Image (cartoon, rainbow, N blue to C red; front, side, top):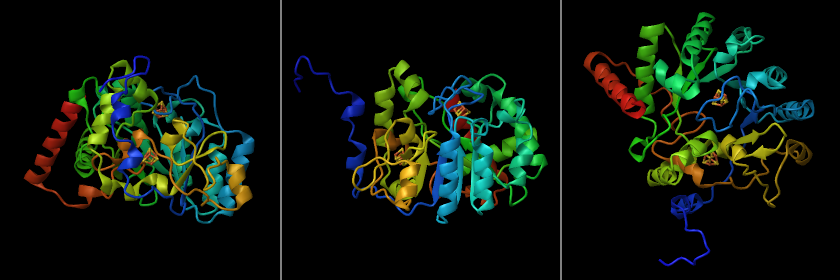
Length: 370
Ligand code: SF4
Ligand code: SF4
């Protein structure tokens, strides 16, 4: 192929089949059941893979006005079964406790995406008891069960702090009381060479390995492990670009596109709201500034949804090539790989079976992180 002299060469990412062309039917929105709210970008950590690019220096957060509108939305729409609070560290951003209170008083399930170490910051020490009192489901990132690997990605001392926080949650019933759910999240390390590109290992097997190791070494119990692929956005994209790998990584994800994952994509049944009250199909689209649009092509806000009197105003989900991250291999979403929740932990494994699975998982983790 000959390129006109002044036109840029197509990148590999541009050259890979556009995500929407992989779909045999448009990615239509289904009835909304989850409201995910990103309360802001303030966080006590600044992890290398963070798609939000959160840090202690960021100041963007929910305003009282938008918080009031969100409470009205929760109040007016019984179809919202789950309110999912994320950030940044959602607990540090304006509106966290009012939103928990509003959702719980109306019988909604509440999820908090917590980094755990926030419990050790002045002013936040009561969070475990607060979560338990409100039966908040805790979803906590722990990208590896080995300290060095977690500290490399999240900062020095984060692994030890996370373990102390998990022990505190366990001590008040998380991981054992059926009403107090504690899930952990795994994502692969950021690759520094194409041969290190990796999708998450099998979720059920890895969950068994995590449970075995964390129980044995630290006495920690949890309910589920959710495995999530790294999407090439935010700091992950910057990291890949610094290593000249962003295009090749997107191609890697595209090469592993699995059409069976499309039906269960989280973007089909949720609205994602940012701290300004703007509406997106998911937190990833939010960070890439790809707004949700109604059937007339107009962008939406919480105020507009209240005016329209419906949550189901969006025809199709907006997609981009980073969507390959959700649809590669077994698929990823904020609920982990599709159709695997519970996995092998609900199956009794003994002796050689369990040892073999754990050995495979340790090898996968070692090869990915090594
Ligand atoms: S990944 Fe989570 S804990 Fe880390 S900086 Fe981002 S929001 Fe904070
Ligand atoms: S990034 Fe994932 S969740 Fe978001 S629109 Fe794309 S496929 Fe859906």
